[in-house]
Image (cartoon, rainbow over all chains, first blue to last red; front, side, top):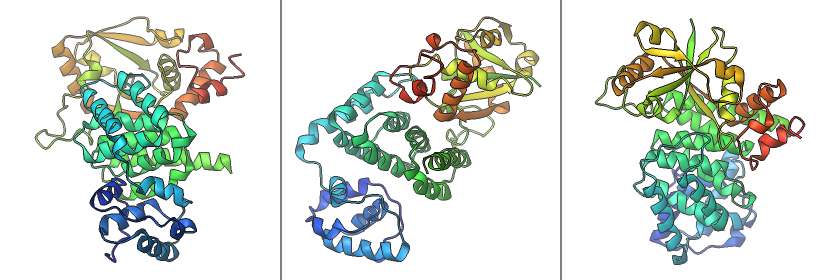
Length: 235
Length: 170
């Protein structure tokens, strides 16, 4: 296992990539009391194809103690839901999501207006919940899809209602702040502004430090200020 | 200096996002044409002190399906005058009659559209209002009786908006 594993963040899709290579035994008890950080998990998994989750949990604990990372997932089931691979039964849903993204290419999206794409995407998230969100994550990071469509999808991921999917949608948006496409990053920024969840403050602060485009940095800052206000109101 | 406002989509107007190696940074790319290639281009006149921008945004945002961010460009009205574009005031299509009186149409051919785009590209200010801020603008307009509740077209499923309007829209 690499010792330089705190170079976060990386795409949460790395979780899936790692899982594709090897099914790692999941020791829930090891993570039960462990405060974990999504980005660290990503980095760990991407750099370790041959370790068990016990190794990862143990290393995570060291990282957390050393760096005082905040909690994003607070139970083993949350971690498991992200780490355990989607089974073959999701193949149909994956194809459906991919087809949806591909068929939307060329659509002239307008802010505040529904489109066949946005309506279908919302319906899929409402119906299949987190499974859809995980597949969208996989599609936007691993498949050849149009940047404008990715951007639109991320806006709606932040916009769609649903407490059950809230956390995973938020994590996907936070990860997408580092997407290679500036358009996708823009969609993630707007998605987070719709969600208005102060839990994203740390992720935004980190993304601002790493963002190369000044206009996107300013957009992130605008959302960050909104989230500071929301946090203030909630406290 | 007087300004004109045009609702756009940031992704199609952001100079950094649309930076192509083969295009110099003063020439407009094709993407923004999608927002202005209209035989009758709709624009709103902004006061010199920008004091009516919030009201224009509220009126335009209230015509949409969903509460959302609002992206727009501002550019000097002189661009239209100095370059002999055929523009005239005409009633807008929002639910705020005063905002409608600030509305202008530019009659434009495909050639005009690309000429106008190039001028806008050089002189524009691109802005985004986040959803939360748009919500406040709509509430402000309703509170000031600029907008009537019955004319807001945003879906009733937009709970944040309709809860904020609860005391004004019984």
